[in-house]
Image (cartoon, rainbow, N blue to C red):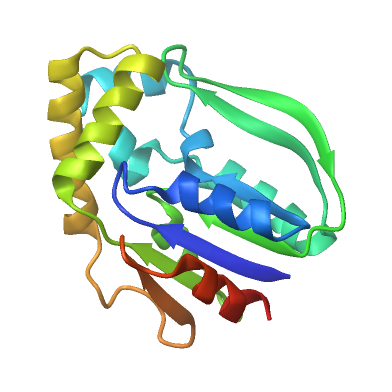
Amino acid sequence: MKLIFISGPSGSGKTTLSNQIIKKNKNGIVLSTDNYYKTGLISKLLSIFVQGFFDRSISFNKKLFKKDFDFIYKNGISICDRCYDFEKKTIQNILNETNNISFLIIEGIFAKEFSNTLKNKDYIFLEIKTKKNECMKRVVQRDIKERGKDKKQAENDFLKSWDIYFEKFNPNSIKNNINTFTIEKTTDIDRILRKLFN
């Protein structure tokens, strides 16, 4: 199975790029790390007291993510979709069987972190580079609409998330034995997709 990791700071367009790839190439599925945050009381409390909680590794339910990843990778099927509710701090499981999966996209702010845990697996890595102010605009709009934040809180949270992302990762933090592509505004996505799927 072909593995594609898509990484970039909050609001850089990871979901958009994932959807673009899925639309143009059949038999693929996306696992978004955004749907694997921790739930329950601990998550509710920590998200109040830990600044930038949802951008830190402690918020990511690695165990559940790895379980889903391993199942899809081994069997080529997915049985359900996960959907995280940021206001309720819960994960909704939606029954949705997908068969004959030939490629798996892992996208989100924890994609790079998870890719570094894989051993003896080749994968393609797409790193999105975009301007800070463009990301901020997208994130603020999304957080007001989908996550119940006001504008000031959304802006402050974005700035913190930007710093956390770039403190956590440096340009040399991915394995050398993979195909790595940098995606910018001027990048010809179709040309890269032809390389990946031909």
